[in-house]
Image 1 (cartoon, rainbow, N blue to C red):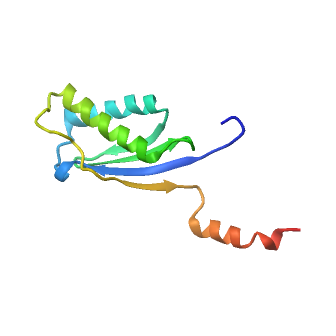
Image 2: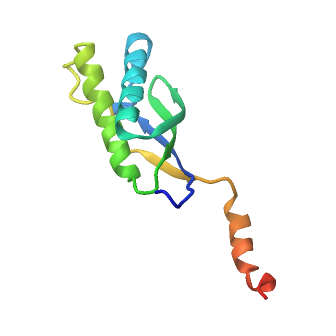
Image 3: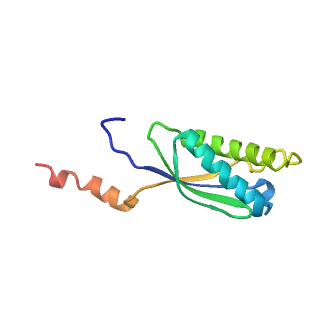
Length: 125
């Protein structure tokens, strides 16, 4: 997108299957490694992440033509596949629960935007 400026950010959280607390040591490091590899492949930037024993938080920057549902699906799928293969964890069919939480992140709060839109006609000449 040559003629545009964008700031598309999301906070994403997903949990381990049955909320088991297994993301420690080698598993945590391997999940981290796979997130970095896949984010490069997807052409997104993971600004910040935290891998907890039973869930992951990501702050993702992406392009406006990208789908957050597709990105999360790819990240979850790849991290599960990569980690299970690298650490020989084939006893797990999947590492992650089926859902995820996602919210868009902006620089200005919703109430300020609503007020700004409501007051457009006051400043129009």
